[in-house]
Image 1 (cartoon, rainbow, N blue to C red):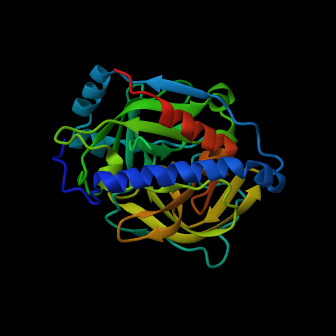
Image 2: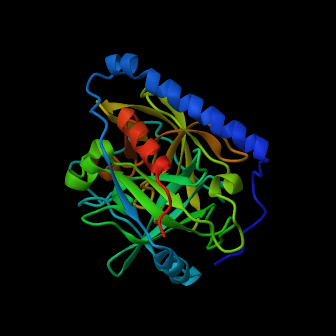
Image 3: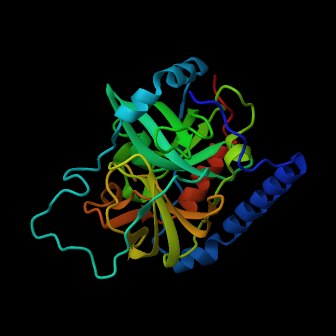
Length: 321
């Protein structure tokens, strides 16, 4: 594994205390706003209970040994339900006029490639660091880490590009999904929170190394957004400036050409700061048809009370060993 680079956003203890206080205030405010928000989104389901998969310390060490640079290079994108995203569909219309195109770039510290195995197959998705009181949580799509059973050898590489690991490789120690996702793969619950462990060479939690995105709960459907995802075509992530809009209750949509398999879990960011990758994440590629069946249209679960509850449950978990 690569040596951890100089932290992109070091914070003092006082700054971290302020971050924790601010997050607690934001979460409290989101909870207090539930009644009025429910009136705007009356179909919001009741919050779901968490299903938590704990990865032992020994398994985490095995994960770090497993994901060599060559293994990462050989990983393939986790495909959506058949037909795969981007495959030709008889009678399928082309993208709407003025659909934006993504741009490859070297990435940002808050977003990275998420590697995992399903049986003997190596795959990747996209994930992002979210600000939390524990400073060690990563957000992705539930279908990336929990299919018929939990994925194995899950490791997050923030800022991954061209085979490089500028901020190290972080093994996952807990996977938290909603019970409704585990039971029936409810597309309205296609999000997951992962707790990650520091790689060799650092004791800092990931948020203090990379910075993080604020979790946006009940922010509405319509926003200018910047979406980042790891495609199946090339060694760099793609960034796309576009707009989100409502697809149906509890599902959002955006248009951007050439978002193929592998971009699942990619964050939808409002208030994006290109210099450090910060902002507020209001969705992840997933949801309807696990992200969509054409490369120019992608979807996300609408982040509401169920998302907030799962985040709080993931934050409250003590690390396993």
